[in-house]
Amino acid sequence: MQSGRSCLAILLAAGEGTRMKSGQPKVLHEVGGRSLLAHALAALAEAGADTVVVVVGPDRPEVAREAQALLPSVQIAVQTERRGTAHAALAARAALAAGYDDVIVAFADTPLLRPETFGALRVALAEGAAVVALGFEARDPTGYGRLVIRDGALEAIVEHKDATLAQRAIRLCNAGMMALDGRQALPVLEAIGNANAQSEFYLTDAVAVARALGLATGALEAPESEVQGINDRIQLAAAEAEFQRRKRLAVMAEGATLTAPETVFFSHDTRIGRDVLIEPHVVFGPGVTVADGAVIHAFSHLEGAEVGPGATVGPYGRLRPGARLAARAKVGNFVEIKAADIGAGAKVSHLTYIGDATVGADANIGAGTITCNYDGFFKYRTNIGAGAFVGSNSSLVAPLTIGAGAFIGSGSVVTEDVAPDSLAVGRGRQIAKEGWAKGFRETSLARKAAARKP
Ligand code: UD1
Ligand code: MG
Image (cartoon, rainbow, N blue to C red; front, top):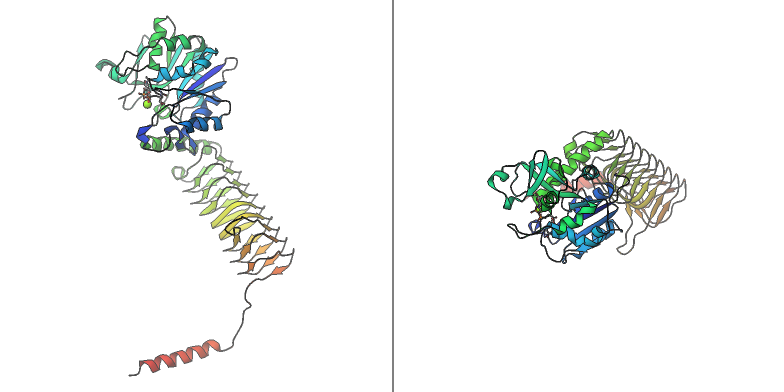
């Protein structure tokens, strides 16, 4: 984003997260189907960070593992004791000493920050500020640090616990993250003391320290919805709601119609094409792509799936990982597709399970068809050729190949391959007994009448 200027990002993730009441570290909880940590890392990468150092606590190896999995080049620094946000940032001392133009310090529990905002902080550095803070107008400022602005310049940030009554009346609060000029960052952070209400080394004191050194400071403002941090499950749900609101707007802005947007739930990586119609109550798990002109009917659930151009799903469709629908394919109500390719124009319209399979173009799969893909130990594939017709209520016992244009009689249990263009019927032959029903009725009525007599 800021071409020509190198950037170090320090992401503080040594949080306790006790209010989550969870066996899992706070920053590994998810919004939009990916961890809070992943959201923060993605925003920093997009803002042009050349190096990212994640500061973790000594007791949570999962956080470092997840960071490395998400960003192989990440550096991990351990803050052995929790002594404040400036102390945490200094855990990245080696990287700070390496000399970057821009330094961003961010919190890993703030998943909604947009890369553009980091970019704006970097612009302020390029324009000459040594320390730039991010502020927001808090609905309820209690607990937040306050931005003390005099004559248009940021003079200090005062933590709530240390603030005077007059300072507590300030509504402009500190979002937390901060940008520092790379040449000043190390001396400024090292000059921060801990003479305050919590005996902590506050990152926020970078402002007053910089001012004392005669350096320029500045503040930018962001909407509260963007800087909301997560400390408990209620705030996690609030962040999810904001994430979904943004994603719905983005999907509609790209040309999809959402009949009832507030009932549709996306993942961070959901890709929706133009002229797609998404009816109410649809859930997209991670890894879904929907091509132009497709229709997702109400109450469908999709994850790890590709929906081709003009294809339709649902109502009550379920696409599991590896489901791939080619152009104009139809997956109807109460149909589950897993690890299967459904060919162009093929129809799987009702009450069916297709798993570990290939369905050729224009094939028709009747209601109640099941691919029996699992014997309790191994999975097997079913291949159905182009234009084949599978009659309703058939069990296709894999491994199995049904040739192109073949026809399967309804209610068949198919255990052997079927040649192209042939008919396979695998069920008991129908027998007919003329007059049987009439005779049955007569004898039954006579028996009943006899039983009623005393
Ligand atoms: C911080 C800010 C406050 C701001 C608020 C916004 C400081 C001193 N205060 O306060 O001005 O309004 O965020 O939410 O920065 N952390 C560590 N190691 C530590 C301490 C904290 O890694 O020793 C990490 C935490 O995991 C968290 C972040 O730093 O991700 C912020 O720490 P927290 O204790 O939540 O700071 P606040 O009191 O909320
Ligand atoms: Mg906090």
